[in-house]
Structure formats: C-alpha cells, structure tokens
Image 1 (cartoon, rainbow, N blue to C red):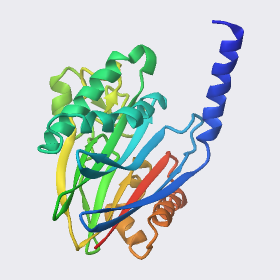
Image 2: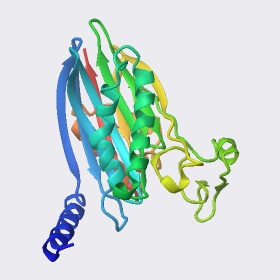
Image 3: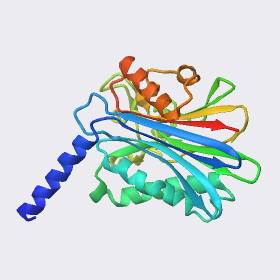
Image 4: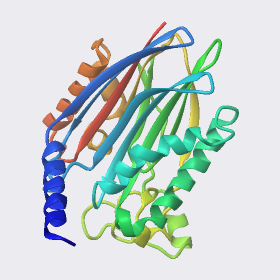
Length: 290
C-alpha cells in the first residue's frame, strides 16, 4: 500500500474516532393513518477507550404506497464495523423481502438471518466482531397502525400504554439459553468477569456476526407485533447501557411528562449516566398522538 493511501486511511480512522466521541442527537415527525408520530434520539459514548460502537436508524420511508417508520438500535462489540454495516443494510433487506407487507414477521426473520449470512461471508472485510440489534417498524394501513419489533441480544424495545410499560423485545441471556448453547457444543461461564457469557466471551446468546462463536451463538430474532392506538403513549428503543441501570417502568415514568421526544431521549441517556452506566448509551423515543 502506498504511503499516501496509508496516511488517508489513518486520517479517516482518527476522524471517525473523534466524530463519534460526543453526543449525537436529532428528531423528526410524520403522519401515519391519521396518527401523528414524532421521534427523537440521543447517543452518548461510554467510558471505554474504543470509539463509539452504538449506531441507530430513525427514518420514514415509502414502500409500495405504504409509509413506514423505521427505528433501530445496533450495539456493537469488538468494533464498530458490524453495527455500521447493519445501519446501512438491515432495513433494506427487510423491506425488499417479497412478502414484507403481507407477512412482515416472516420477512423480518428471513432478513435477519440473510443479513447475518452476509456479515459472516464478509468477515475478511468486517472483522471478527458482532452486534446486537433491536428494530421497530411502524406500518400504517387505512384504519390502523401497528409496530413490528424484532431483536437479537439485549438492546430493548419498551412501549408505554396508559402509563404502564410493556417490554416488546426479549433479552437473549446466556443463562436462559444455556441448554441450547450446550447442545451445540458450547458452554456458559461467569469467568472471566461476573456475568454469564457464551464460551466465556459474549454476554448475549444471540447476535449478528461473531464468526468464532457462531456454532454456539444464534442470530434467530424474536419477532412480535403490537397495535398502536389511542391508549399508546410512546415507544422506547435503547441499548443495554440504559437498561443495565433502569427498569422498563422507571424509564417510562422518567419521560411520561416530557412532550418533546428528543428531550425525552436525552433525559433518559443523562439519567443512565447519573446512575453510573459506563457503557455506550443510545436511545430513541417515539411519541404518538391521535
């Protein structure tokens, strides 16, 4: 490799490290089936020495005369390249599935597994790291709106309805899936560290990537649907940097009186830092109004 090319590669890496070190924040809005939707997000880098490994998506997209709300949190480990790949590719793979609008749950499952296959095929480019993910897709029809949530790992989706928090995702913990991991020839150990890990390495039982663990690690997502109606207050998506220090109901209670979703997302990340979370923290809040 020529010296000039090496210089530009190093320069770009340094630029990326600094650009992801501070908070990132934003907001947006749309209308689906007569429902006004506003969202806000906020990300804060944790105490680790490596660059930010959390990425998110918060956008609206038209697909075959349907407007969709696309929201996701990708929490990487052993580098930021896999979650960055997910940010650029996962939703495209989902909406391009032929049966997406007729059977979104099946389409999302297929797209998760297909995306993981592509990541593993590109290990030479993307590295040996991996990422958890939680995705939420708002789909509007003539008379109603629903959210389809999928996840692998411990990033989480929580909905508040009439002030009561309900978790829509599943935390894929190694201890819970120990039997499946052991059937595949793996093991779960608390060493090194103080939390259960697959083969003593990874603290989640499902994730994208992680080629070295893939024989014992699943990328099968949990997928579920939930109606959005007049009783729905808001939806929270966040990485485990938030959920390690805050329960679902505590998070809902913290923002129930904050009207601006961007301010709500920022408040939750700030509360997580106050509660001594050392991890990267990313949060999206989606508010619903009839």
